[in-house]
Image (cartoon, rainbow, N blue to C red):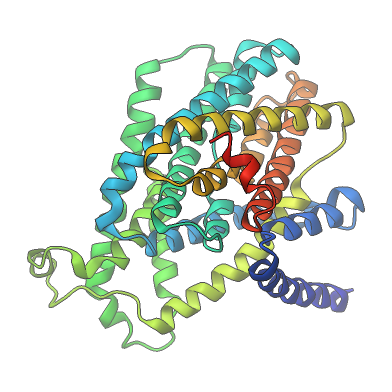
Length: 409
């Protein structure tokens, strides 16, 4: 039995390499076949179940998110940050608000859920998964400025979605709400503190990195420090994902920081990653990405055909909303092809899946069937959003439907 598992792991890793190579030729995003493999091994055949992964399954999602945000940040130039933020905030908040609002109305009026559960559904589906977007946009033929916009949008929307949806669950649980705390301290306060924490962590690590390299077997030290930083950020109620993003961004641009900072931290100069370290991180991220998307497919539960159908319709509504927001917010600095790609980026990921599962444990025995149905609805949207994103990118990258999409943009 152990031999079969080892063979399976080897085949999955080799298969992921093949999918990456296939993408470069066919432009079919590798996240799709990996997710479908997980779907086949999990819900369809029942060969594997998410519960069987135990502790490893619980930490796979956070590790994947940490590494992918860190990797995305390490390829981000600080010089472009200001323009990226200016250009991305309308797309970010426009998409988040419209997706949340349309999903809320759909859940409230068509599915007959109550106000707060409907708002919860809207909030957890309002985000765009950075764990899917980051590896996806690397391989798409769009300008770096558009990739940066999509990257920032996905990272920030994921954070806002997590904070606000958990706040809604707390409101349901205790029956009261402090709007100032939710909107002010919990959202913007946690983001600002996370940026400061990630920046300080990157500066400190950059000053001692050269000394760390002198010790044996320290290739994984930077990742270890990143995990510690992420954990501390969450422990102090900052924001782990934004901390990881900032850490990668500042560390990759540390030599561009003011030289006065070097002496204040007691070092001669700031260090960035060398080519060997970048190669190692790339390989680690590749492995984690492979098993993350397979685990995501295994975690999707498809046990109610009616809710699967509603999930399909809801994904179409989300996609139409994304098309409208894209047309309004990014027209001034992008081509029609760029806008076609942007309008296709709607994937929901493991964070959404985890959030959908929380109420079942939080409200054990209370409205259990409702929360189970909501989880099934959300899981189906996750699946269809990945499929739609992958297919639309494939069709546009191969110029099959780009002209048809462009006339609406």
